[in-house]
Image (tube, rainbow, N blue to C red; front, side, top):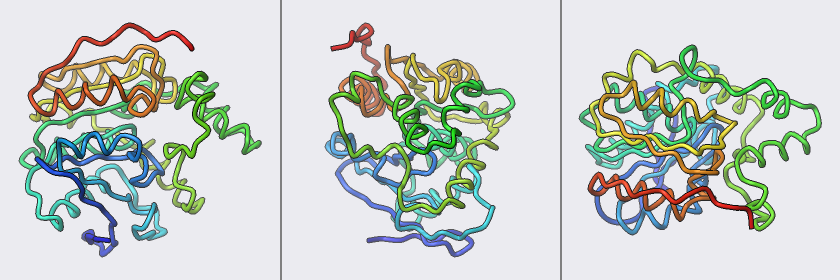
Length: 272
């Protein structure tokens, strides 16, 4: 089990698997590397994948201090790449991982090949925040109802009816309540608007058309702000598009990462 060490000494757990050019897969807020379990094998067939546990999650250290930030998480990614002996890698970040990836690409262009930003946002004040009804549903005192609301923001009802779980996108169950709050604040305070024009990596922005957790309107904001970025919206997909719609999203991302090709997306699925 390899560990890198951040500048402040925090131990950062990571895994490297697969073959080919390196590809960093960055998870969402308050999640460890298992976020990618359902789709990682398909990427391993083409790339050497690197996944990590953010500080506060998984097997990484839990400093217990309010110093978490998306730029800080990006520095942690660099520590992992340095420890693994990887100079340059493609980067695919989803949700908060996409926010981290923005800082990585903007601040360290020599370390990023191609960039994929999935279901993410440029951050406040320029990004589009989730609606008050979504915030109320997630913050309700009934923990079972709040978790049900999160599941339904991540996946369509038809998919949930066929998949009992476990679902690895609903948060690392080993996290402390304090670290969950620190991750939430880090993601909420993200603001890369001024840095986005500095991104030089070929960039693809991917989002589900039905994402209310991180509203779809953020996708064109990113695509317009990042020079020469391309955008694909997956019809009918919610926040966890990369898992539920893996048959569409994975080939889409693989095509972009390997040769810049984007396929024509199929029409919106009907419930079955």
